[in-house]
Image 1 (tube, rainbow, N blue to C red):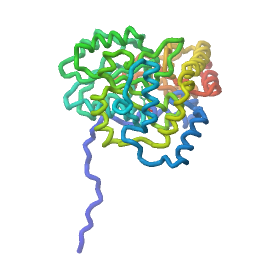
Image 2 (cartoon, rainbow, N blue to C red):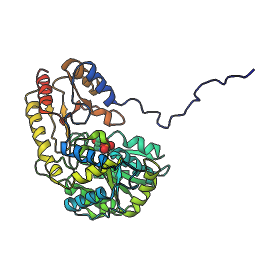
Image 3 (spheres, rainbow, N blue to C red):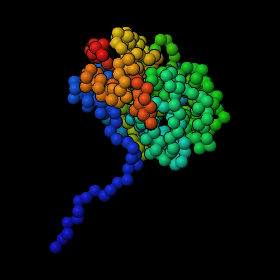
Image 4 (cartoon, rainbow, N blue to C red):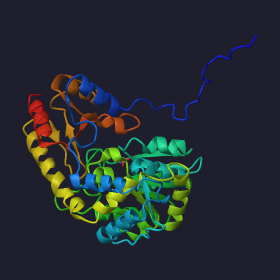
Length: 389
Ligand SMILES: Cc1ncc(COP(=O)(O)O)c(C=O)c1O
């Protein structure tokens, strides 16, 4: 008689035991359940330029549907190098220094895996994007959390300096910043360069909102400061720039020595990224107008949104860049942030994200993040509801 083996799944020891369902998923589900206007998750509720769709579908119809070069379609890498040279003045070689990735998320993970060894320390500035810490943990690194200055969210260089050790391998920065909507000044980027110059610390500069900087201020890319460019993985995302977050295409620009190590990991991770989308993006990028006009496009939305918020009991903090707006709700409620955002979704019909989820310890400041990458109609509907608070 044959014995049927038991169909049980062997136990698996989690590599990321602390990670559960994210607040973004939870708030989006709650928003749907209560018919709330969803200003929680950061993506546009409007479509991209139809010309971009035409370029991508043309590429598909032309048969550009097989594996491209591992580092990305050469024409797209050339466009990215040209853009960076024109805007930030640094000449990256597209053959060896630009790699097309499956969004910024993959770019950051790959950069971390490429340079962090078990036991290395990586500094992140809190509050920060939620993928950084798990990425570092997956690489066996130790996350060193340095707070941005509470209230203003500016970098605290004394604390960054004090957190450097012989084990520090990497620092991750993000400007324009999600979630605080601050933008680093040239003086701050220069101060960072002065601080890192005597060290061997590498930098990941998450610049996915590079084309969303307001009030005439420039975006100061790490690429524009030679001391930083020489040690930095500059990361950006076509998803943010062209209103196509679901396409998941981004890029990394880094000096050859860093790009070589990056590509070793990239090759055995995603290998290559969607071919027709890359060709479509390369053709679309021939015209700089869409990204050059993006600051004005989002500034108008920001101003519309802030004018409406001024008629509510929420206090809007400055929004210098990105498509986010922090609001202080202390005049409305004493609830902690997550409870407030749940209440706001259920009772007011507007979904927001608690700022505390961007901190490891869940630091409470009575602040919530709202996303204004929405149609005017959506923003106005949310504002009507917020005015009733
Ligand atoms: C700061 C920051 N970095 C990275 C990403 C991820 O970008 P992508 O969708 O290209 O992976 C996001 C998306 O929300 C973000 O806000």
